[in-house]
Image (cartoon, rainbow, N blue to C red; front, side, top):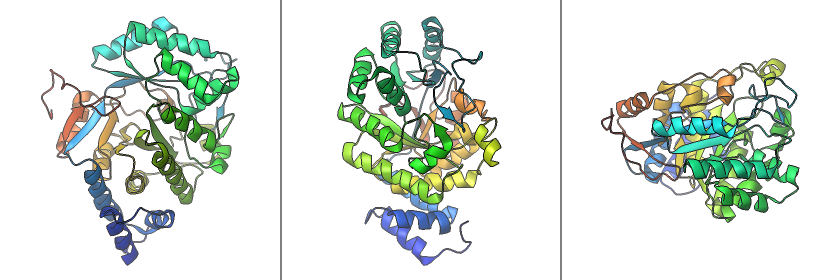
Length: 373
């Protein structure tokens, strides 16, 4: 729990980082977690945000999170969405169902599909290639698809190297990779959370190979469960180190564990951490990850108002309006937002809302909404 007073060392650390004199070290990041008042973190994180993104724009994207299957070979105690292959509630979307979801997304101005499973134990790589080719040939939309654990599972099931899997998927239409499945990049924590999923090094290696092939991806963190504050810092360190090496991450997104309906909450009696912890962690992420340009707000787990406040804690992007989202919804997070509401929240905070694509290229403004409406 942070102290009520503001130690001189807090000011020293924040001044050094804000002025770009030195990187935030692991020791200093942990000290900020334990001692820095929220207003001080907000001021510093916002200053770094403006240094990295010197504009009043806050961007967002219109996309849809399509889960092509909920059948998964991993057992994640934090997940309320997955089903086993024998479960009667398990499904695999037909290409026709997928196509209908994409058509609806495009009609609403969407320019991206976030496509993720379930790691289905029976589907071969050829099935995924066929799915990507179908989407590209029929709809031509940006495919932000397959988290690192999925890529790892594809490689294991098909007995192929990551590079061959990724090259084949890219040839079939894969455009970028989401940062899902990172949870906390510390193996001790991962072993407590899940069975049958990739390790920390394997998660990082999938992204490393993708970046080496010229691809871009995002990095994420789910916190507020069994990890320590030092584990959160270690997660930041692993992401920053890979970004130093490859430069392939476009953005970082952190969110809080959603405990409802999960085995983990039942086993460990874990309650959702508060918004103050989300804002504290987000601000320190902005200070630590000096080589990742964009930080996305997690209003999907925090609600619109905290999403708005996070724009003063280092975030320069509101993520997506999420036409469809199933995973965190299954765990109890039911926040939804229209594009108009999102834009109003951004404008109320004193920023200019702008549509973007995955690469943060600005997109034409919606004709039916005035700028800032």
